[in-house]
Image (tube, rainbow, N blue to C red; front, side):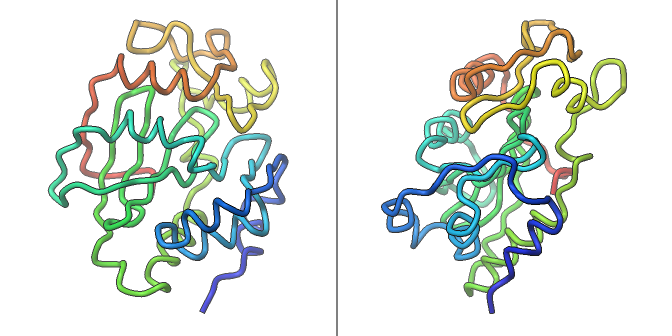
Length: 215
């Protein structure tokens, strides 16, 4: 059984931006990524939804960032190799592990890494697919739109000020929170995603979090 891609576009709308997926990417990740992710890539590409609020990641482009955030992690489930599956306009990433499935969520501006071992849900293709399908349908604007220091959601205000991010950019706060900067729209900039995420991985001590509110 495969899940209809239309369920995802019914929930998130049609992509507002998309890049075609190279044929070699399907070959490279056929034995690592769940089949439903490959189907999303095939039908939608590396797509951005709702003017860049949510993106399907190019795993090649994002691998260095994934490595920055997962190197040296000590997890009860043990080591794994991860790829980026989705990310938000503010850099929140969900990661797929070869052994542990959709098991990590990274919130970079706070240095949080949420672990949720899914190795018990990896026995069949259906088990693997349902993890991603359920996550995409459970994710909402609320979970991707952080509150600013003024206790108001950020995304629409930053979008109005700066315009949408692209496949390789994100909204970052300058100076970063780790350097004492506020999370307010007038401190947001469109920045190179890979560079900014690497900077945040160096500035923020990683904090392993047990209860994941982003799933």
